[in-house]
Length: 194
Image 1 (cartoon, one colour):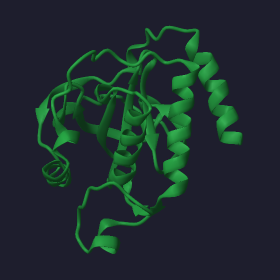
Image 2: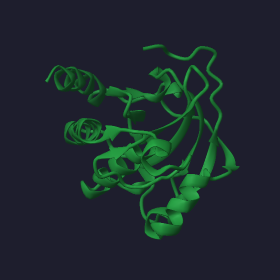
Image 3: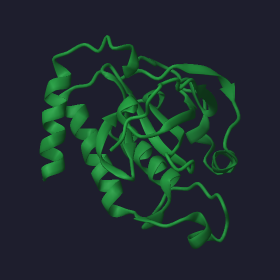
């Protein structure tokens, strides 16, 4: 309950303001390599890795849409038990929709799917590869909104703006094609700490 009430307070402060802060949106580079796990996933789920047509503007952030983010993040983070691909599948990388167990990219795929089911455009739900402070790779879901880019993370129950997280951002899926990847120019001098 505490997480939801804190999230609602944060959301209330977001809806009245227009984000003009340049840091609220990630700076993008050019096309880059697709992670091998995602490439294999796309062979199995071709429809989830296709060109995205229609409006590609960031999602207008309303109280209802914020509630979607909080709800989906909580459902996935509580409902899926973390386990590595090596432990569960016996391989280094295996991207799929989790049933009961999964690792970071599986949480991302589930959250993306759940938000699409709630009417969110795939153009605003971007699989993102980051580096943790210890150098390990990690995946999060970046959500493009009228108030900036927010991150849904299985390691953190609170939803934060991308530049308020402790990660170095590497690349994410393109907003116009879910099977293509774009590099991220993360030139921040200091990464936020939890």
